[in-house]
Figure (cartoon, rainbow, N blue to C red):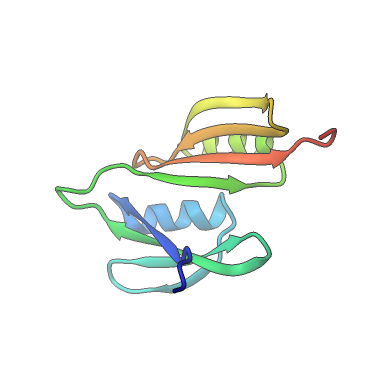
Length: 122
């Protein structure tokens, strides 16, 4: 049996606006788009095209989700860039006892994510 992570869907109110934010502010590379969806490469450890992130129009039954942990080069700079792009910062950058710099944000549609980077002295 094979079990692996392939991708995630984020439900958003405006796919075009979300796509611009995810491309410009997170630096994700677009795979494809149609009239209602945009899909990006979602780099995973060791594989720049390891998974996908699909932006999907929100529905009456969809709600904000937690998208997971995302490794970044600089937690503080990424948090500042995302705040300026309209993300809410739900946990300010701080050093976690397990050896990472960490912050949490939500995109303009309320989808949450955690940003991490290893601390140099761990």
